[in-house]
Length: 170
Image 1 (cartoon, rainbow, N blue to C red):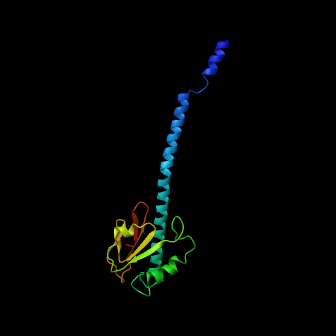
Image 2: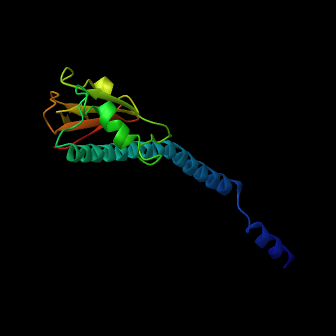
Image 3: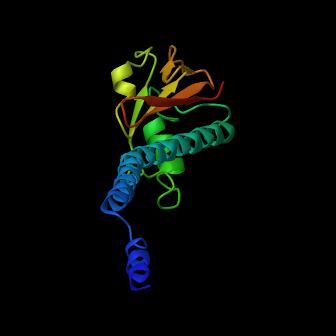
């Protein structure tokens, strides 16, 4: 009876192999989680950039509706993107509406009739928003000749990883 008591106590614990296997599995789970988190954060920041771009496109459409069908154009002085559209529709928005995912303002750039096709390297600059009047999106980039007498426009933003995202109203 005394022997049976010691035998049952010995069989109740874990062996060192079992403990090592559990630790190895826990370590694998931690590695998978730690590898996935940066990609999820990058995707979330890129999605925030896409949302801002869609809101800016909606504001450009509002500008067109409020200005006799004229889209903002950098070549013009009365309905300029930088001096007419941006101060009234972007800069006057509630704080944080058009901010970058990490905070702060985007850099805006425009492309007019002299710059007919946006270069891939220019559109892929992260956190820079490109506006092109008279263009449409072809893939990730605006493409087309700028024209001041059109309502068509394309807007692109650079994403993390070197890609870009484009929105147009066509």
